Image (cartoon, rainbow, N blue to C red; front, side, top):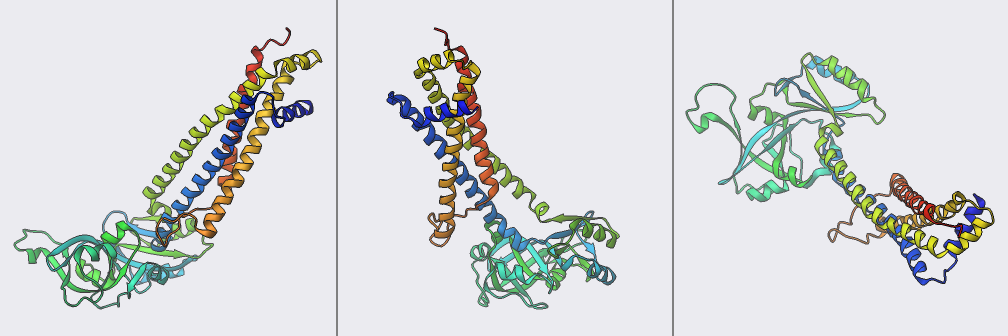
Length: 399
């Protein structure tokens, strides 16, 4: 193996008299370098976008959320509240009343989700999403609306010149005789504007849980969901078991990932697709290694005959060219990773690429991406080197 490695290094690093071989080797090396760098940069960029997209869910979604399984509401008694307080690992919980309503301003209407929250709704969430105005006061007819909804309906903060109303269908049976009889309405004042993402900015409004219960016709002990914030080292499975024991009726419990399963699946699918596309590009670039080694074999045919005459068998000679391709792959991969990591570090510290004047393109420097990029190029390069060295089997070295 030492003999093969020595000859392989001489063939790789010594300039050949044949300029075509030198060019082919240079192109193969550059293909590996730029291919590895591109794969690493793309993976890091996509991880940055993924983290940027999921950052909003970390602001608005709880660690655990409890839903009724067979109806729209859940009964929560004072005794159950005491049991929830006693569960180890729960930092706080917030009662939620939520349903579809109609928001109107003057002659404009918008259907959206009204989310009624209690006084224990996390302050961290409020501070993260509230961009203008203030949070609503309990027992007052206040709402906090998203940017999109305020722009659509044309109202702002404390806009007393415009009448803003919430409408919700009245529960019950029988024939509807008038619009007033079908809907329960409530005059409200918008006191704040939140910004989460485009979808929620256009489709959700917050109010106090008292307002939501009144508008939706719910009793004092009825809720739509329970949002739970856990302690950092809490065991979620143990908490789920205790939650099931607290509620007599059937409940569904979801963690943050399950609450956004569609988003996670979409991002993971896109991640795999991007990786496969760039791997295909790398495969095309790897063909240059095969071409360079085959050209080298043909050019060094007389030298190979000499080695064969001195006692080196074909397997030993094959190892020379396999090692040549392996060295080219390892060195090219390491150099490519160096350039890729340098670009990501520069983007993290100096914001080289901007999405907008104030928002740099998000990237993430993760060791896993280094392993994936280097592992991919190494596997492909070794396969190409083996395939190229295999072509020597047909070469006649006896004449």
